[in-house]
Image 1 (tube, rainbow, N blue to C red):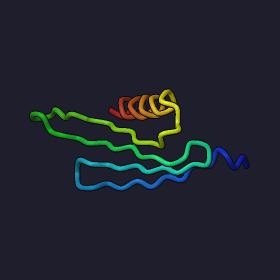
Image 2: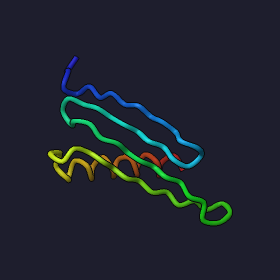
Image 3: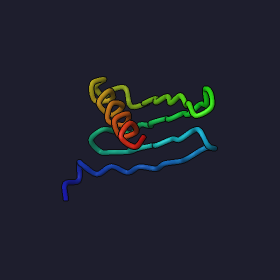
Amino acid sequence: MIVWLCVCCVTVQIGPGIVNLIWESSLFGHGAFLQVLTPVEPLTLRMVHHVYCQRWLPTIVAKFFLYSEALMVSRSL
């Protein structure tokens, strides 16, 4: 097993529209995804993703995390 690839994740759903995913990794440090769903009109939702991570993590890595999360969500719709 490669130790530097291990990631520990905790997911907490707060109510029907807020999901927090908190991760900790030896390679990427620790950070969080926040996902918020807001109803706009009947059968229409607005989804907002936020990524918070350590300052030393390159921005391109955080953007890749955000893009991959958005891609997974779009495939499930």
